[in-house]
Amino acid sequence: MKLLLLLLFLGSLLPAAPAFHGYLELRDTNNEPFYAHLKGDEYLNWFESSAGEILLFNKERQRYEYAVVKDDKLVPSGIAKKAHTKTRALQPISRQTLQRLWRQARSHERQRRQESP
Image (cartoon, rainbow, N blue to C red):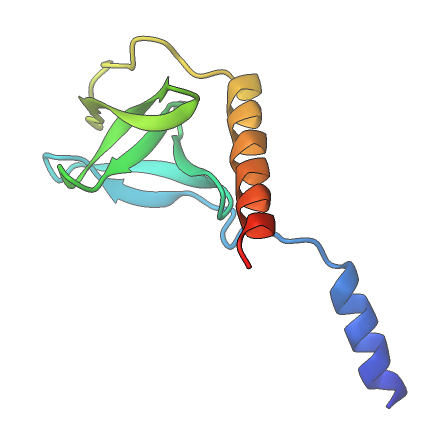
């Protein structure tokens, strides 16, 4: 009984953690590999390439694209990621911007949960 209570107490103290810390091998539109980290959480997530580029998967076009901020949301830019080129998004996204967007997404989700019965 004591062990069970101890495990429940310790489990409540553990924060959420990312599922995977290493690089993932992804494929561009030409089926060439590139490596990226999966970042974020359930509220906002993205891929960060080994070169520090912020990428999103565009479900409509079935490809990885550079991300841009539009209407305070992180969205695919329409510019496909190519493994061996120097094409970049027009304006890089700063860490501060990503943190602000993440906080907004998290706050919006909390409000949505409080409003729903």
